[in-house]
Image 1 (cartoon, helix red, strand yellow):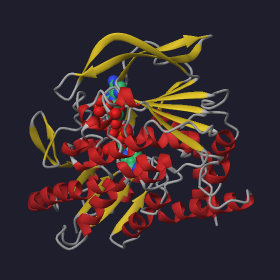
Image 2 (cartoon, helix red, strand yellow):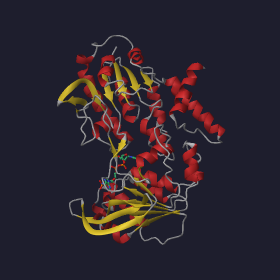
Image 3 (cartoon, rainbow, N blue to C red):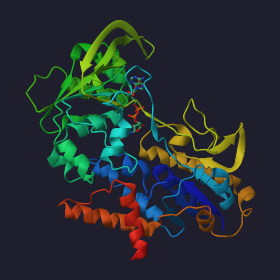
Length: 449
Ligand code: NAP
């Protein structure tokens, strides 16, 4: 019986497991889905904003796959120095790495590491209760915040900064983050793009949501946006960009109405320095840019400073190497051919990739389905040469012998019950546990019960 390991239980990992066991997949396959965290679902649990309940509900679909009798969730198992890829490949017929892109891209400008300048991924991890997240006191003493970048992550963090306690209360956000955001005095939030409105990466549905926030006004500077030919004449734009521009044009030039929160959508400003004052962030210095006629921008030599106590760098994710796997540091991905891992340019038998570590951090969750299918098609084609070489023992025995202490599905369900109990004790729905000890304690409590 072929036994395959999928490393990573986010959407790409779960879609890979699903493609392997469904008709057209690998006949007779058993799939272990390994994750370094004791909890499944990757960025659906730790990246999708807590107020995006509809997207979060995708967990139901992922759950059904992980509960399939041919699939086994093994949380708390990290492939890395203590359990190298070569060892995992000894235990399984094939291994598919779906480890995502866990780090953030850097701006490479002075002041980037000042206190008060954080990556959006740090902020997201904190309000999503990722057990590795640190409480940096993100919003303490902040009245003005700047998000650099105009992708969907920037829209998420801007929206979370503008949301009030009543809207956050029903989410599963950890109690400490809820308390901090509820008490925040943030009034002005800037979301700043280095190019024009028609080149923004956010999607229209996400953009529109900003306009629906209670007691919040949207500020778009008409003259600045109109530097973009696509903004002036949206008719010729691709549909997605045209819809974005139409929404922005609808907000431009609206009279101010004195709402509690103001979201400023700024364009043609590229960050050149995070400015320091009293040892921490005091603002961002931008150079004004103009379109270069080729889709990019050029500097104008004129500058503008936006004063702020908080800067969230939201310029994209970056893949992180898995020790023992090849890595293309420029792209932040594992080199591959149709999902087959390449070592020194040659296919490494039995090793595959899918998701962001394969194609880079782009696309929506659904993009991972065809990506996983392509990888599984490669694996199925290669299967005759792969299957049967390993010992017939259950790979779980080998993982445990190598020092792993997996959290199986029952352990995860115990965490879910503990989170429901925590929420009930706080008069809320389910509330996420935010530390390793709490998660592992809940998972292992189940074994003792
Ligand atoms: P993204 O979509 O790649 O956007 C990155 C933004 O950062 C772009 O505006 C980019 O501008 C800007 N940027 C990059 N380098 C910069 C620099 N040096 N200086 C100034 N700006 C810079 O990345 P993301 O927002 O992290 O999103 C990652 C993926 O997750 C996307 O596919 C996104 O759609 C997805 N996602 C989806 C949702 C949702 O569906 N609700 C939520 C969150 C994330 P340029 O275009 O000029 O490079």
